[in-house]
Image (cartoon, rainbow, N blue to C red; front, top):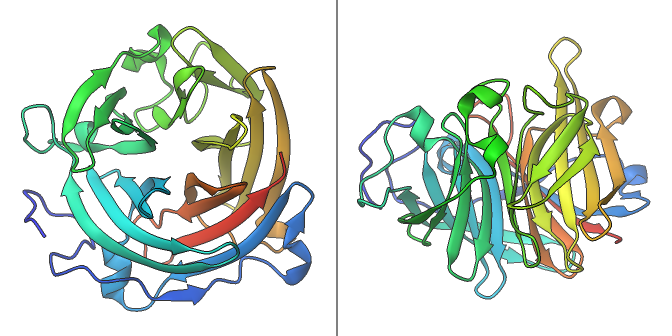
Length: 304
């Protein structure tokens, strides 16, 4: 494992091991199926503090089904390369294969929080596309974290002053075979309706009603886009996780499920989402390096 040029909270510099996966009580049995969403499995990466540290802070994930590798990025500018064993109904194993620093075209690690704050991730044939906050941008990287090229942003997304905050910028990115690279800020831009989310492409945009902060997107088998939103009430400690399906051909949006902690769901800070196979997806939470939060993996199935 390479040595890093900066210190990361809770990140170990020892050899990386596989995670001990424990059952996570996401919800009581009566909530396992919700119309168009079925929860298949939920696991917590919880055992020792060492293992928690190894997997801490992952902002988004993407799965390469050809070799069983799960990639993740963190807001500390790290690229996780993990081997995932996922069955039809169970999450069997997860281990870190490599941990890389995201690097610029000059081969040097990205420096400073505003350059390293990676939030969105998707996989292409040519590499990985990553979206960033604080200094909003999208770039194509190889699977060793080396930048290949920057991606031109749609005009409304280029200026930092257009966003509502430095931590509310390019949260999600996904590649669509017909519409190209699509990206979305966490909340609406200053001049847009705050009650809506806008997903931007090169020559197209889609709108949907907001049900919280938009955290990630994933392409489905039929070419639709599965969208994950999260909301958190700091006073009452209530969490809401919402899954919606965008049909880009029609521009229509269907809400598939709304999971509320007040209804008995044991939710955490879900930020990562990726297609696994058929109609199955993997959802992952970011523990923010907080010992009171958990790193949770959820395997779910949707009906399109």
